[in-house]
Image (cartoon, rainbow, N blue to C red; front, side):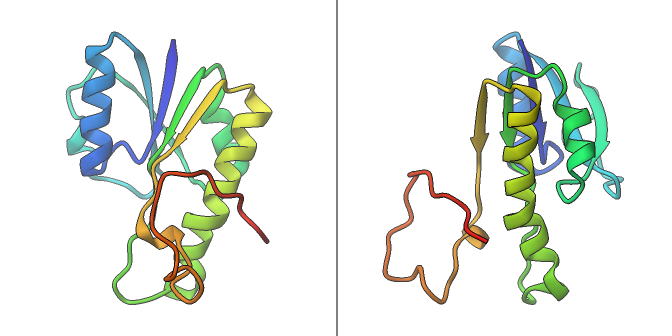
Length: 137
């Protein structure tokens, strides 16, 4: 079973990849084109491909033949929206991942989200939970 992990070079991603390898899964790690720090997955028996959640064609290429995708790639910012980069990666990027999974016939998508996926202006009155929410324009 081919499993793709986006955000595999992060702390959680690197640990997830190790856990999946222990289960005997074949792993493809999609890393951001600009990511030069691959220490989290260095020396692991994984396929590494470059991609960008803002580029749906790169996602389709990375997800080709995958049965499962774990989407962990995100942009954490303590300085604000970074000219739209945070939304482009965390919101539109997640939508692109979902679309690419559907386009490639991926059987299961697991989306691991940060607090940045919530709208702090309207979501403060609702608890953070694991229920699926649909992305809206």
